[in-house]
Length: 400
Ligand SMILES: *Cc1c(COP(=O)(O)O)cnc(C)c1O
Image (tube, rainbow, N blue to C red; front, side, top):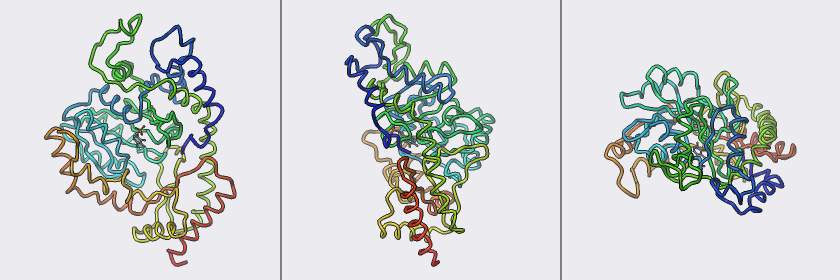
């Protein structure tokens, strides 16, 4: 998953280009920057690499989601249907624009269950936001059909699935808009950063202005820009963009290594007939940042987690069901609507309702799931050792 594992001379060179001029901001200073425009270059590279018409960099993936929502017209009281298994940023962004997160079940794809989405549509629904978790995707055709039927926006949180594809298209470029995160542990990193991708010129223009205080970027200089609407500051810096530029040039290498290592580790787990694997929707290609696998029961899964911990081999294996960041079961701050300042009554009511909402289908899936993070720098020997020791721990629990 993480591009930071292969940080090196390329990143240093791109950052040094910026340090040479000292122009750390992405806008303006046309003379002193001596032709160095790293953020612009990275945006162009993103459109070319992932096949979308427009890309707007932001200061984080969370900022990208917020920006996309605002640019798509999602705001106060609008319901956004999203999965109960995701990263906290997904609901943070929804709340930040005054909208209502409506959490629904995931299925064995570890992403939105289209039936649960269909059942959650109300007259207030404005958007369906699949989160392509752990490298692989939601059933986008099924979700797009629901959106079409009910005239809803499809916004892809592809923050952790950079490089995955669905029916030949890059994840994040299929909905009305999509986002990536370039935080430190993502497939490619800027240290901190994110992007909104879209094929809709208006969504792009709004994203461009919103991330920079509403500037229209049409003036001869920043002071001459007009402000057609109120914006915010979600800008990326040239230093961050420079790191991302070096990383995106290495993406195909990252993906190749990741797929190879994922496949090699999977071959070990496939020796255990009780193990099944995360379903990838037809036509999808997993970025392979994680190998996600299931045991038959929650008890066995918890015992395997305990056994791996005991043997000191748990690192890099994630049991999301009990993880504070990623699953509804541990989001007490969300369910208690613990905010630092007042939120709307509508938002508060929706959050409080989550406390009594049962996510039985998600529980049944997530309580049996372990995701193993795939490293880009594993050697064959390390994979052999990892695979062998994991299988031994699993077999011990299964009594074999
Ligand atoms: C990482 C991540 C984000 C947010 O990204 P940041 O850049 O850390 O703000 C959003 N959604 C998902 C699913 C993520 O994994």
